[in-house]
Image (cartoon, rainbow, N blue to C red):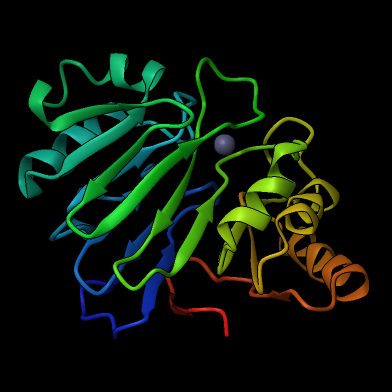
Length: 229
Ligand SMILES: [Zn+2]
């Protein structure tokens, strides 16, 4: 995986690296890693920030975070339950707690934590806005919730990641509902080990939301995201 290569202006590169919500994002200037599990620390040479959405085992691996943080000296932004579990793994000054509504900057990249409808202690979702204003919504394991509609109108996301499996009650239909509420030009089904569930999501989009395209990612491949036109 060599996502560390330069990302062009107005684009962001991403890789989906496990069957859950593990995503790395390379903006023109920053490298972000979200919910790293089931991957070796050596895959990440330079990292500016690790983002954690909630404390479940498929999203939070404290020894792995400790290792990545030590080698890259990155910041860690985590929901409050995960932040607590990371208190001995990450230096205090390098960890920041994320609660819904919280906003922070990694250089020129803006991170905003939002609500997450998932049975964890204090889960969050993340809106990542690149230095070129490309907006990506990483929805963690969330099920649809009504505020997503207003958020979609306000934020005008370029890309939304939608959970289609594994998490409690998550299905291609609930993933589709997230896309229907947020209406991005591009929706990406993830958090599944089952290609069929991603294809079902794509079918629902094509039928019910023809203006939203679907990208079914393969694990560990690099994809380029662009701004909506
Ligand atoms: Zn999960």
